[in-house]
Amino acid sequence: MLVTIPTTYLAKLIPNKFSNYRTQLERIEYFGAICVVVVTEKPLSNIYWLNVGDPGFDFGGVIEQTNLLSPKEYQGLHVTYLSRYATWREPILSKSDPEIISLFKKQLQSIYPDIETKGIKDIQVFRTKTAATVCDKNFSDKIPA
Image 1: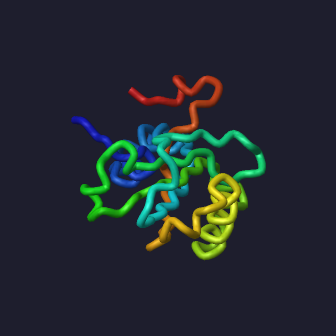
Image 2 (image 1 turned 45 degrees about the vertical axis):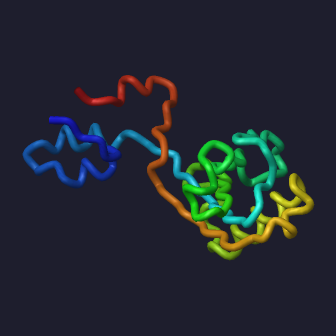
């Protein structure tokens, strides 16, 4: 059998008679993620992927999808993703969507001061608790057969 869902969800589907296997699955931890999607009438830049390593920013990447795929694929609009991986104990993940939008937009404006002239059409926040496994020390020992 091949299963491609996060192990935290798979563990909930395992019958009681396989409780040892379920326990092994539950030991695997995940990073969560926030993805803020900014839709504009004009591109922010000509850069597809910009890593942001400055500790003063709450996102780690600015990905202008429509610098990879044509804006024609998006009804002529420009789509930019702001990404953030974090543990669910980090304060950023407990903020409301309006707080995240305000924070990310302000920080994005420090990179692109003319963002207001780009015709912002929409900003949406998406979250997941299972974006990537935490590959900590001895992670391979946690992976069940």
